Image 1 (cartoon, rainbow, N blue to C red):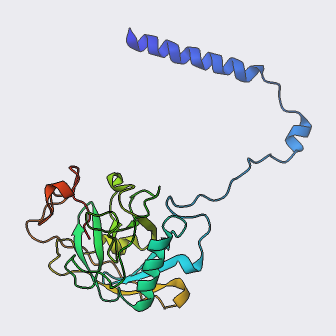
Image 2 (cartoon, helix red, strand yellow):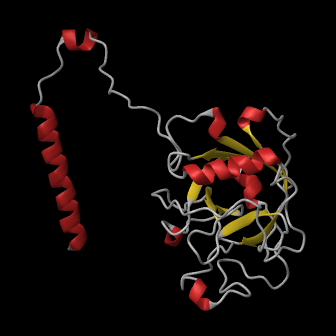
Image 3 (spheres, rainbow, N blue to C red):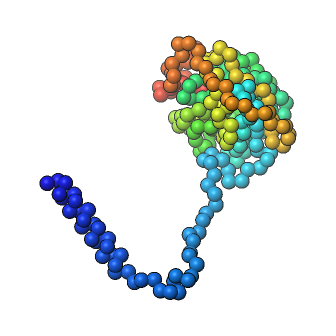
Amino acid sequence: MLKRLLLGAVLALGVSGGALAQGAPPPSKDDLKAPPVLPKMGPAPTLPGTPAEVKEEDVMYLDLSTGGRVKIVMRPDAAPRHVERVKTLVKQGFYDGTVFHRVIEGFMAQGGDPTGTGQGGSKLPDLASEFNDLPHVRGAVSMARAQSVDSANSQFFIVLQPVLKLDRTYTVWGRVVSGMEYVDAIARGEPPATPSKIVRASMATDKVPAPAPSSPIPAVLPAGVPTGVPGLPTGVPPAAVPPAGPTPPR
């Protein structure tokens, strides 16, 4: 009975649609000769988290030991002091040779510490927060910090999977627009057994030739490390970490 009712409804819709189509006047010869009217097209969509127009001075490159170059579009419009800090450190060669010391599957890859321990930073003063509306989506680049919101210095993290609970509590200052496969290949661990490195960081204006690309080195999880977002990281008190997952420390 139900099938019959459904079939009847479908037939009724078909008849109704046919009646509407048959009621429309046929196109005239002039209509057939006229060129088709195309819909107006807007500007090409941009990747969320990136500006419509990108200046060369706001493009940063990370050449990684995982096999290739990562291109990051910086956002001085959203976090001017953080962008200026990173540019300063890049020009100093500060990030060259540093490792990703804390990399959590399904969460983020953190680096920018010259000591490789998560406790170091530059000799420059800490930065005041610049929380903004840029989301912590995949590929977002955000500044790590300690418990104080004004303690960011040199360490940053690249988001592997969306973690919107960090929005407006950490300062997003850029977005990966190409080379994310090399970020995905960064070795996992806290710290990784064999950490992946930033071979060289540069600005697009430096005109540093890109390394010959290669297939990304597969990330290898240390034995016993579960996939997904794990629980509390070692040495961080529960009060410092939101209940939904770990928080990138300084």
